[in-house]
Length: 435
Image 1: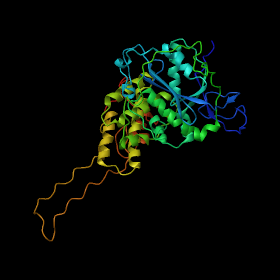
Image 2 (image 1 turned 90 degrees about the vertical axis):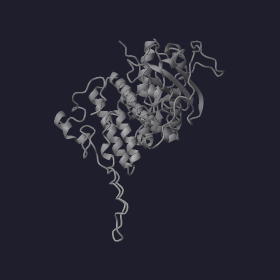
Image 3 (image 1 turned 120 degrees about the vertical axis):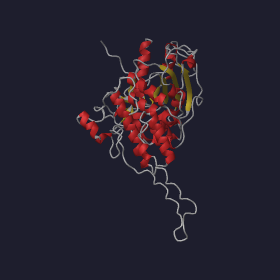
Image 4 (image 1 turned 180 degrees about the vertical axis):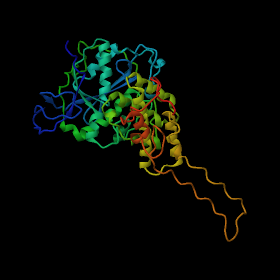
């Protein structure tokens, strides 16, 4: 049986010398991790780009569905040439991920099915390179949806911003909200697919300004079926849409905790698994909204469990996130009690409410009774409490002095296999429980 071709063929950096007069680079240079496969002919692109974004009900393409799509066509300078977006009715009652995309069952009333807009989507991707953030996850969802409706799509040249950003820019992580700051933008929470596609369009010129002349693609863009006058090809039909205008869904989080989330380091597992990257991107988006989001975190974690992650691995992910919050907060300078309050709210949302309790200052001693001093020994005010000291704290055993990687409890239970192997007694559905 012939294997189905991938939907995206990812562009990569050319490492060998390239003649500027030739539109095709020499065959077979080494390629970066963003490439899907080596190609005998590599194409360079000088035309438009199509920025894609989608809102989904979870992280598993085989089980979850797309509920919103957005396409923004731009040139290499980031000028928006065209935009298109629509809600998608997945024909199911339960719609997960509302904390991220703000879509509930009532929002989708009158929205088209994906089968109704598949032709429109593919037509808008013609004669352009597809650009997306966490493109591997988006590709899996689009491929699964197109397979469900029986549409055989061509292989499209694509750029994955989350793969190319570490090569082009220096950021602590490559989450969408962090990369948006390179273009002086902020990501709204919740956000629509059009909001995210416009962020991708704003980030793209920053990446192209550093890597554009060195990028090549295994395949060329598909030919356009729309003539110069804008008339559609004979196989295209106008699809109904139900759109949400950009910037009308949520507001960008502000404040110290939002800035702290942008400075968190990225884990190695996050860079190799699009599902885990999507999960952490969603978590770090909803945590700095200024309220307790324990229910939202529980829902997102349930979606990660349905995507195939064991409870022990998710527990280790959250422990690392707490420890990253602690080390990054102290790395930015002294931590005030107001900032500790924000950290404790984040820990409560993540299911470990006592993780930052050691940073709470002791109450000051009682003031002396008025008139109890003398002229020789006047009453002095008690010194202010010292700020919290920088000290690691384990997310597993909650002991101060080490992180999970050096936790003796993990080594004793898991035989030195790391933080994932030592978790005991966790249920398969709800791994986020207070210790």
